[in-house]
Image (cartoon, rainbow, N blue to C red; front, side, top):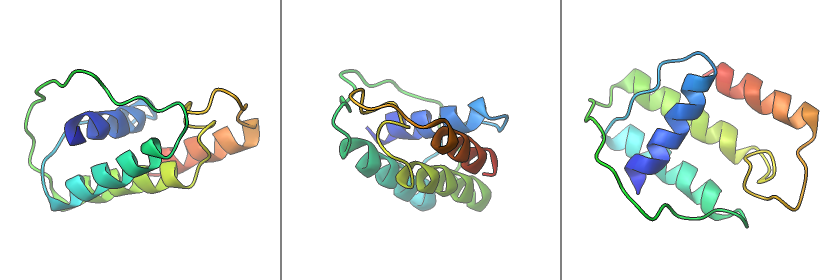
Length: 105
């Protein structure tokens, strides 16, 4: 589950021009746990039914910090801006703020 969440976080990071790679380590696991907790609190979150094996990458301090940054950006957003509450619409300003946050990671 952590690998999937980490892949989502790093996919978001990659979408804003950064390098997205998976990792395994204390800082990266903590970021994945934080991101998962944010997603699980949203009404439209569905846990993945399949798990894949990703390429193992060492979790460096820099990658751990970037991963935590993405998790912190997600935690600061509403579920609708994360695409996990389809009953509401994310305000453009909030979505822009989220993009800028992730882009700064």
